Length: 249
Image 1 (tube, rainbow, N blue to C red):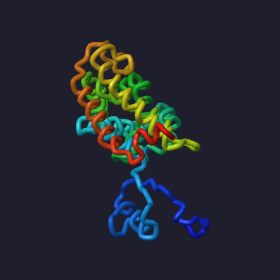
Image 2 (cartoon, one colour):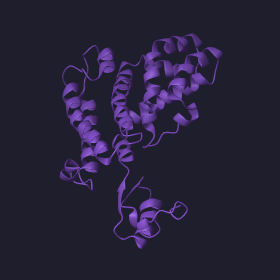
Image 3 (cartoon, rainbow, N blue to C red):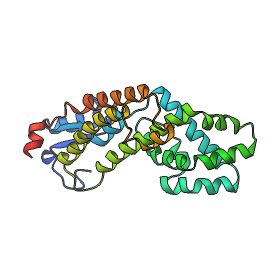
């Protein structure tokens, strides 16, 4: 590829990877092979990829997210009415639902829009499921009637919205590494604000506030935020270009 584009490897200063073994493996990884020809080449794990990995779900939240995805998939497989209800989901997400059901640590944020649409249609969906009077639908009806489960869905909808905002800021052209790291640092400061807000007025969690009417037990959600804060610190504190260098640039 470098030869075809007449790019001298000596002129390549930095390479970003997704952290996969085929990229960073000591013996046969791409970075190792390139360094055999250019020892001074620097490498770093992609900022966007690391940001998404920071936000990996714990077991409790993964279970709720999976149930929502199964529910939407069940609704999609039946009548024309269900297809009409789900059309807004598919348009908003801009992907086939099979793709969204692929749950992994890197792509789970793509479900943020699904959660938003699910939350907007939850009353209509619950009514439809009740009218079905189906044995297959009953577990989903019980899920939607469970206030505790719906509270978790509300929290996930809010927090994925914030994470997706950061994700969008890290994408697109003409952004320097300084721009990207500034966005990450700003979000790290926001996380501290979110943590305090969870224990107070829920100003940054409007859907959770609406679901709980301000009366909620936020202990588990605070733990999630604390883990998120720690993940960001662990992954970004040792960024190769130090804060002073970035500030200078």
